[in-house]
Length: 467
Image 1 (cartoon, rainbow, N blue to C red):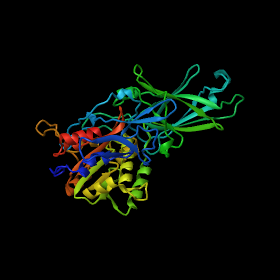
Image 2 (image 1 turned 180 degrees about the vertical axis):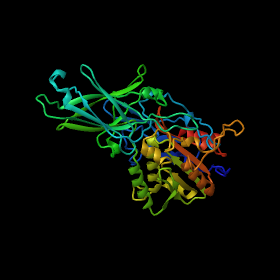
Image 3 (image 1 turned 30 degrees about the vertical axis):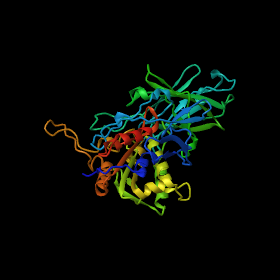
Image 4 (image 1 turned 30 degrees about the horizontal axis):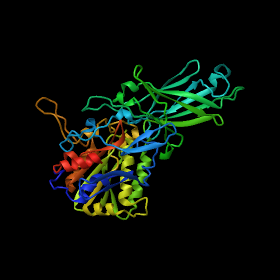
């Protein structure tokens, strides 16, 4: 299988490929490799304005007034390595991830909503004894695109109402022999069942993820902040819950939320990361398909029958493949794809593009897959597709037949998403390859894959590390 050829990337546009592949930034590259300008300019991409996400290539440092400072940094994480010769190592500068407030991914599955009678605490002068605790009802639901959260119970102590939720597990992963889970996204509705003499106008509820300590990467909870919104389809509406706390003793993740009962109910969404819905994915694909200088094709279908779309842009001889969101819980990867494609096509500027984009499009033909795992994304999974396969481990076979450890991959039965992408790569050839990820302990996206190319060099390593 000819995935990578041996042609070297030494010209400015080729080297610039590492740095112009931005969603939220414009990266300026001088002609000399020693003069890499590492300052970034925020673009008009919706992703760049997503003030609440752990936004792409920038470190997000939220403070108490919710303003965010963006700083350049980069790291690769070994657990995202592919089990193929294409992607076999990750190198680059590391950071102390605990220095940042970050968030990251996890998993879900379909379920019906669960209702339970609740008690409440109020912000007015009324005390708990003044309030009819049975007059409140809570409903927890994950029955929506990307939802994940199973109601357990409520607990009422002296002045605290707690709602306990569990994260649902991904299906069993055959190769890794485990159930991944960490991403969650659920909806909470709280209401007063009847008007009372001491009706509450505000109710503070403590939300607890009871099984956080058993998640795939429990160390990632420490120092993280979850997100909340009342209008989940608006990416700019998501804000951080800055009082998010992880108790290493109990293994529970918790935060509080003040519900405004106006007039007598409140609906709010909570999520590990701002979600990127399948509906948004389809809308963006349709927007790209209308562009006169691009071609949107389906490489095949997922196990649940969703299309594996590929966006073809440019007219250059060199073939560049960029894939995103192999792990469905890494929603920031598809925000990245949206910003990248928007810049290459000039979607936010009437199809007008800048000079660097023109140069790169003349040299490269891009094949961009915005979402490698649409089924897992819709189901709310952390790392797997509909059958429970971690697509990042499905790029080649592993083990030996002699000792019975042989694992054949990819396959149409388990991982058609990877199967169809590799088949198309065989047809086009690959001069450059990048795999866009997010990470539970990194408040920015990171790139993988380039280091597996035969033409990988210290110069390209330096450029990708700087990027």
